Image (cartoon, rainbow, N blue to C red; front, side, top):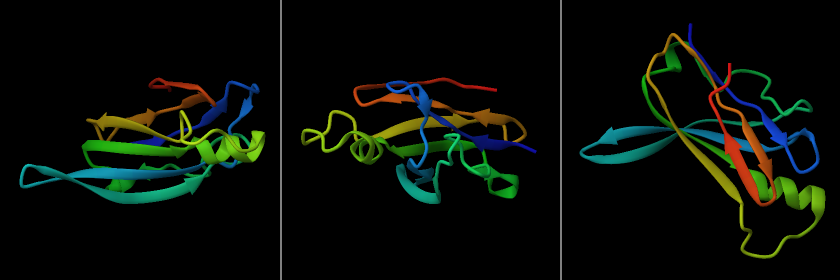
Length: 121
């Protein structure tokens, strides 16, 4: 059975991204216009991971999803107020999941001024 998981690493401090709020949306095609539907919200644990998969079982359908990471709030809590508007605030990763039988792991490596991602295992 397939699933979607994530974890966050704070590359500026070399620690897990603990306490980062995130949201998962599904892009529902409707009459040529995509409607974004909130699937789940979560907060990363002390290891920078979610305690359970973001998506699995019958809820996992082929399609396009968006992961929204509230990195600006996380870094403000760690480092104090940043200039407004923040250079990075809500980081959105748009991913296509084509096979509901696979495990998709989408990590986020983040600092106050940059981020990267990849398909993990």
